[in-house]
Length: 287
Ligand code: IVH
Image 1 (cartoon, helix red, strand yellow):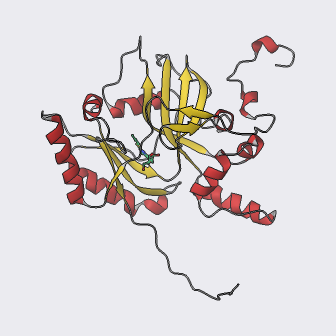
Image 2 (cartoon, rainbow, N blue to C red):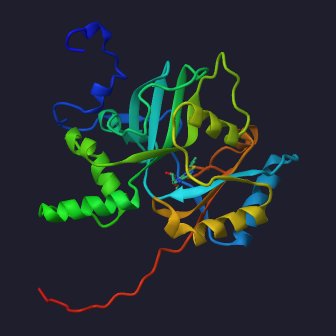
Image 3 (cartoon, rainbow, N blue to C red):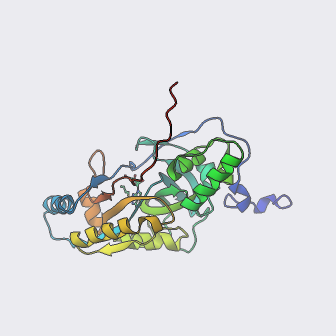
């Protein structure tokens, strides 16, 4: 690249590590708001969620749900124009987030150029930035050895790593990105996806990781069984999981249902209670 600057592209591996620290994050407005998810805690609440969708749609659609573990990290939006990563942003308040393009470029699991072919001219990919449990343990060990601040959990470590004005710090710590939905997508000339599960398969073709152990469930009971399965296998996941997410697979029905001010009407999070453990209080120091 030094000898042939004309060959250097924005997707060059050398661009993964930034130069000068930033002085502040720029604000980015999300074209489509990045909302939260409504939570359910029982099979009855799940049933009520399906009934609300049936009432609102007023027509028969197949209620197949695309289910995934709910990853405990940070929501990030990535914008690709003509297959090149041009912008990355945090969720922020859902309407306006912070631009973290240079930080995100250092995450090796994020393609700087989309793989394959047929991707939309503009494609917004949404997903979660996480730190794997083993990487978190290693990072804390390293921090401790250096006499630096340790992190309370992988989510905090991921957040602290991503929102770094000094990008070399982001680059030095292992973050992953797992894609779970599309925002904006201009499909021409490729045919648009009609199912959430199809969109996820395309994202994998373009070079993204998607949440592990996703499953299509054909009934509310199957969703509940899946959530139970995820809960039982929670310790075996490489990243922290705090529930299971069920999204209606039919994208047209998703669009018809739309959003409330807070969350989509076509998806819910089946939340698990926080993990509990016993500990021994050894001492209290009054200050
Ligand atoms: S789908 C329109 N799938 O949970 C919202 N979200 O509590 C679509 N999350 O903001 C979100 N794992 O950051 C979806 N497999 C998953 C997820 C997931 C984690 C996060 C996401 C969202 C938050 C809501």
